[in-house]
Image (cartoon, rainbow, N blue to C red; front, side, top):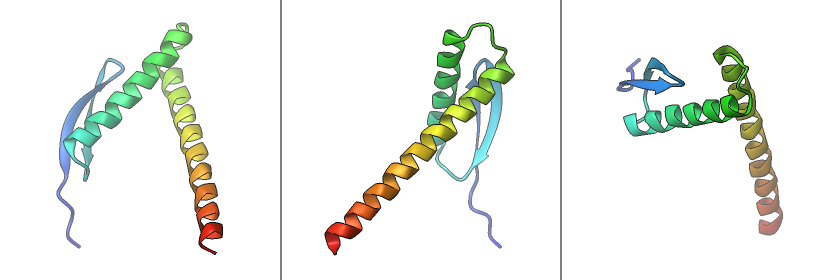
Length: 86
C-alpha cells in the first residue's frame, strides 16, 4: 500500500502549538486550525470562567452540531433535486 504524501505543519490553537499531519494542503490545514482557534476564542469570550478543556469540548460539540445541520440540509437538497429530475 502506497501512502499519500503527508503535509506536516505546526499550528497555534488557543495559545498552544500543535503539529498537524495530513494529506491536505498546508493552507487548508492552517485554515482548519484558524477556524478552531476562532471558535474557541468566541466561546471563551462568552464564558470567561471556563478552562481550556471545557472550551475545547464546547468547540467540538458546536462544530459537530453545525456539521450535522449542514449534512441534513444537503440531504434535503438532494431529495428535492431527485424530485425535480423525476
